[in-house]
Length: 303
Image (tube, rainbow, N blue to C red):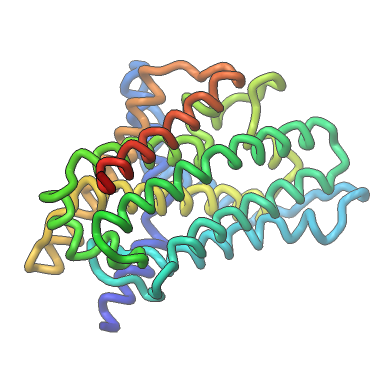
């Protein structure tokens, strides 16, 4: 039990920056470039933690609390997530609702910190972020409801636990639709192409990145680390859903889970390499489409 808990916590805290490294290397491969090292984000985080911070005189404690609350909320959500089919460190009926709203809390404080700067530029990004989030959350909830219905449990540990292989045998079409919807939500929640481009600095296209332009030093390190944690969370759900096999050996299950996470990051890199960023007016259509897929999956389970 203690070893399992240590593995889950260690995996959750140490692996996320590597996933972004995989994404960047895959994108560089498609572009014919060498790209940054796989461990580049670890180096960037260490460098930022050694720097000082520069804060505007117009900001208040809200601006300083944004990165801290963001990381804390995402990290707490990670405690509710089952890893490699094993029970989560914290599990109870209906915990998927808390999971979704912990992510919403992180987004809320990030948007508040952006508004606290008094910049109309960052206010524009915050408005876009919460607008698209209001469309992504229904898709996430509906996909999780499909999982709950297919597995017969209201806990994430049950949805992603030993009962998942049985659910695949009985409701594979519905779970395929839920997996597609979850992947779209993962791209939206993590500010990835085709919803957003984390590398852009064009005023007309920026969404998430514009909200964190005024952060520096350790605050920026917390934001970058929180973003990698969030990618890990969605990758863990998607990986467990797609690779919902049961392994007698815990070590084999954990190894497959890690490989699946790397595969998820590579898939994100492939999508970003072969697709262009959507126009802002098209993003709501994509997110509504993800909700519709989940609804279709739910209908297949209820018919």
